[in-house]
Image (cartoon, rainbow, N blue to C red; front, side, top):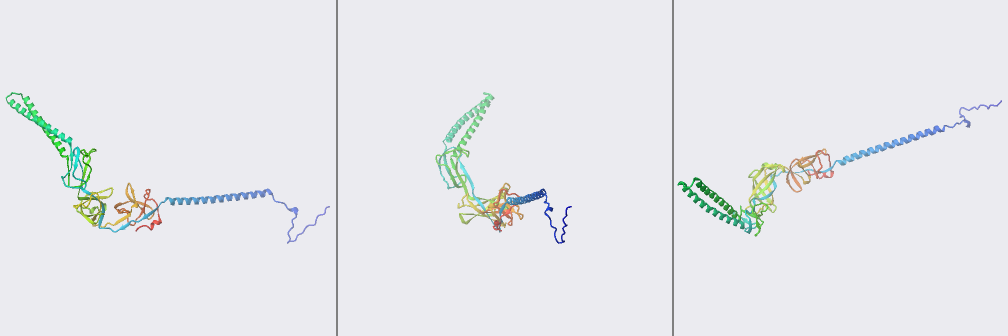
Length: 412
């Protein structure tokens, strides 16, 4: 009978010893499956995290690009404020001096120029001889016409004698009434032929008189275009050649374009003074002779004529001067740079930026041109912000940014 080992007793504070025979290792397949799941979960977590980070980065970049594109799409402009100057009772406008009368002189007959008697710059009087033309063809035609007239006149005398004779014979019934009427009709026809011959002679005599060219009015000969021996053709057509130009320079006409704001002050008889750069210390007095009595819709100005006496001939036609009007009004003057205007089909405009940064295109009325600046009579105020060098693509209501560097340059 086998002997059993005695039971092992342990103390309460002692741990029961485990014998090697009691150790059983865990299942290797279960541990590998657990580690694989953890690894897959970790990989998925990393991928999800990386995708989320990439999505957030791309979204941030897209938003930044959209904001940058939107910022770039809004143009940046430089602005300036109009310069406001106090009004002046004197209105100064540019004017063009023109001759009171000016006429080109053409020949009225064909021929060759024999000689001219007045040259460029000569003072001439009305009816004074300017040139002589040799007209051999007209002379021959006139001689022939006069000879033909004498023939017709002789035929008329014979027709008259025959008509009188046949009238007397008719009283004694020596001829028939038909024969008497034929002779009377022949006399009337001869009278008509003589009238036609006289008219032809007078026509050629008038052409003959045109061989001498006379001045139609007093003035100055401003141009001579022919020399002796030149072929002269009558008329002002394609073959006709201008002989002289004559201008009446006392008085002179000065044409001025008066802005619409000053048009009510332009009345006939209003006094004005004309100044020229070549006579800095002199003023030439004149008066408003006439106006167009209508505003030009293209320029919004009133065409006004000022007549200026020019007895000493100091003022030359074609000159440029300044015309001073005592208007008696004090219209404030606003000026802007010339590069702040837009020229479109609607007319001149200015691009104004409001407090919200939006563009408003306003039509403007142009006054005087001072070179780098121009006077504005209406359409903008002194407090407006005007875009300098505006782009042709600017539209009404377009959003813009104002350049900070130009804000300090704005004139108040």
